[in-house]
Image (cartoon, rainbow over all chains, first blue to last red; front, top):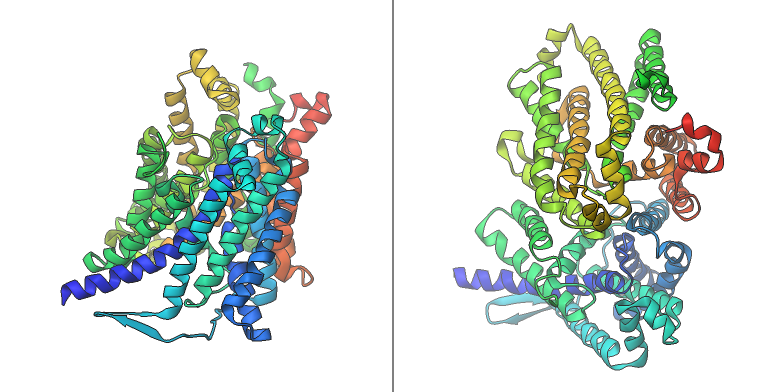
Length: 286
Length: 322
């Protein structure tokens, strides 16, 4: 009985963990490539939620079809953010890029609050639920987890085996040298920012298929993404996915041992400890 | 005394002194409330500036010291019946002690990693306090109304908090100036420009950074106690608001990081702007977006802030604007 309950909460946590990992991947990519911590990450996740929601409720698109549109818009938005806010401060001290992306965050949240208010929304969409053994879970969560795995593999293949992906990694390694080798670094940086934003928006859209949300919902996922990036190391999609699984698993398991309100304490203490003791991440190189 | 011939110190000091005096003489409750908020943010900004502006370390979770110090001070005065002044100083000392301990570990991180760690610390502290039963857990603590009687009623108690805050902001201005013009402060600025070079030149960077962190944590602790005493209650949601931390950063950027009067000016301007946007019917719902746009424009085009820009533009002003 106890084992069943443990198994159920672990599965629950792990399924969610895949989506956490996907959300963190966007942050990790941007951080790894240009050393910019994108503080607009949370608001982009929230915009992804609202994009999916609006397409579903206004035009009755299938949510997964809507996700494709969200991905395209997310990519364009990301390149626009890069051009408007990040490009000028990319070589300035950290504070400048942190504050610039935070300013973007404020603009998005401000506009979002004005348009959508902060009342909770809900995507009224269900595909039933699935039972395996004693564990029952909604199909939407399973699809979200599978989409996360698929995107991770796609991103991995893209980064390591395609020409533009190699360019991105070259720029991450050494921007000046990459520029000297004839790689258009500004273009690469802009598209990396676009990719990171796209991943965040898609993760938001996937979350929206099973959790209610408001325009402020991105914040907690942004904090979780920080934790995951630190756990998994930077710039590596597989690391982000594993970090996400670790965090999701913890979130699933901790409540069976202690009150659920202690979860954030454990998470953030772990976060600070890993940062101090192993800043390259648990899975990071060197 | 050469100190008497330094207008960079006396101009902000006299202005802040006259400002507080004006409110005291006027005796208006509404003015006092508005000024309290302004002075609170000005003190927070000025103390964070010691870490951010002089040392170059970005702390996103600096509000954790406001929360922890505020909680401690509030606990001492509401549950243990300590007088306000003693409780406030204890809150400050606790914050400073926590900063000292944390600093030893966290200040080894540089740049963005340090900024992230401070966010983590703030969230961990909030989650911990929410579960910590002596501090009332998620519901927090509140002060028994009869406590105000020992100060001659709630009205007098509020004026007392105002005066205490006024003294604190004067003190933080003096400390900020003192640090900037000391050998210690020069060491901090060397760390800001290039930490490795500073180490090579004989700056004891780990100690210097930790001391700067401790100083910048002391004042938020005092301010926290005063603020929660004024409100009459404290709860985790109010005490560890990440966005308050970030607003403080915005204020410093607005006024000019690494200057003495910049954070004060920035705090007053930002709060004033926000108050205007919030009350104007046209911008009411968009105030956050507009504040974000202003911040973006400052970061992109005026990174030195108002005071920094004036100092660059008009050399003659440098003596007067620190």
